[in-house]
Length: 447
Image 1 (cartoon, one colour):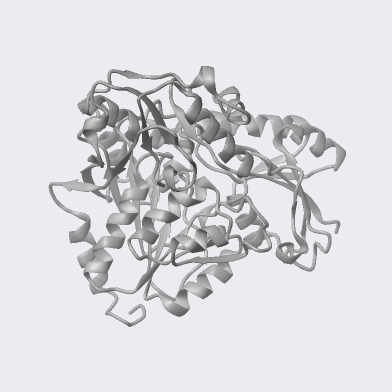
Image 2 (tube, helix red, strand yellow):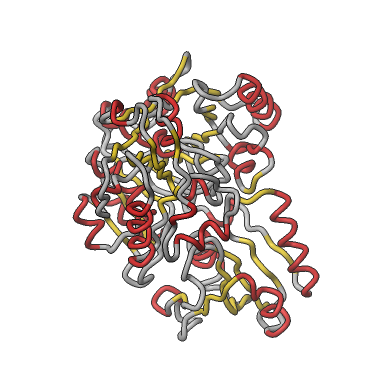
């Protein structure tokens, strides 16, 4: 029988993992190419032979998603596998319609086929949308495990934007490791807070090898999910974060709703700043979709190193890039800080944007008067620096998880915003982890 001809639609993360899990050694299917979206400069490259395996000695080309219909027709494609996240249900079905109109089947691979199983207990933290507060939740879990003196390591959802072969398995123990691995701003935003806590972080492309490396040194595996993707490792405890500032998104985005339905614990975050109606809507949707889940309400209080520098000043607000772009948020921690400490004005950076930062505003037209910290490559990082320094402001409010002042030269007064998770009421994450860890004695494996 001829091999089924397949395209995998992705964004340099889930797509590669799905290939590794389901297609790399599969002689019934032939992956003709990947298509790429969301991430700049991924298309035009290739998934290298060292990762693609012996069935693909020349590797697998990566094309822009805009070419999808022509690729389906030109290569007589049988199936198209959708493999990226943080997408509305409506958008997913628009993609399905494109694929079916071009003559192929549209496929979604489920968690059962794409999750790796660990010999060690796995705690997974994911979300229903980008920007819900997953990162501070993961840091809270890490803090609690440290207090319990449990040896753990964090696996971060993939962000392989460089040399894919060199990024097969990455281990980060220090800030210097990020420089050695040529990390982008997007990678630093996720790794740096863990590293400053003394937590070892693993990432890369081949998560079977990553998991094997983690199991050699960790007693507990913590999955730090990205976007609103499902975990790559089968969790023994699955914590999912929801955002009442975007009520209803928990049941209208893919695969965030899948996470919600599979969760053991749902954290309704940001209750200190969200409208009560939004909190009630999320609670109702959680109750209907997953009535057996534990529900925790939490706040994400913010901290500024020098808040008086904001008061009465004209501020440029720099926010986490993915939160503003495919996360669809209209503001982040930087805006909250500007309001809380009385900035006179938030300056619109759009008249001053330089170079490739302009492309971000062209692709995501609803960002508004904020600056997303985009830095997928050296050129974009330089353009971000030029843009910040061109904006006529009194202070730069840095609302990103990474301290941009360590990466670029900001020639203006600046303050950095930090945020942590704070549970409200009971049960707390500490209560739930206490019960969970009783199943797994210290230094032992699973019972």
